[in-house]
Length: 227
Image (tube, one colour):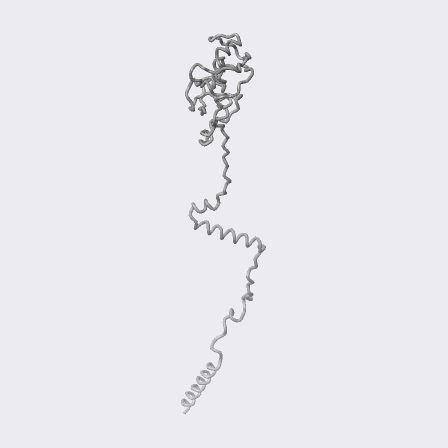
C-alpha cells in the first residue's frame, strides 16, 4: 500500500513538473534581438550634388561630345574640326598685247595711203629721203633737188627736209613690201623704221592698228599687224 502511494506521488510530481515546463516560454530572445550590445541603426541620407549646376552641365556636354567622337570615323572628325580657310584670289597681272584682238577692228582699219603733204619733215632715226618720198607720194628728183641731196645721200636724223607740193612718185610701186601682213619687231625697230620698210604707210597708222602711240617703241619679238 505504501509503495502504491509512493508511486502515485512520484507520478503526480512528474506530471506537475511537466505541466510547469509547458507553461514557461520556450526560449529567451538573443541579446542582439533585445538591443543589448548593439548600436542603434540610423538612416543614411542620399549624398547631395556638390558641383554647381553650370559645371555639371558642362561636364555632361563634354562627356556627350567625347562619346560622339569616339564612334565617329577619323575622316568625319577631321572634317568637323577643320577650319575653313578663305581662298586666296589670284590676281593676274595685266599684260599689254600690242596687236588688237578684234578681227573686225583690224579688217575695218584703213590706212591713209595718200596723206596730205607737209611743208617740211624732220627725219627720225633710221629714216632717209627716199623713204619720205614713198610715204608722202613725192617726186624724188624734185625732193632731192630742193634739199641739195643726191640719190645716195644719207642725211642724219634731225635733218629738216623741205617737201615739194608739186609732182608725185613715178618710180614704180610706192609699197616696198606687200601688206596687209604681220611683222615681227627686231631689235632697234621703231614705228618710223617699220613704216620705211613697207614704204607707203604712215608710222602713226601702224602704231594705232596695234594699240600703241607712235612715240612708243615696241619690244623685239612683238608681232605687229600691218594694215
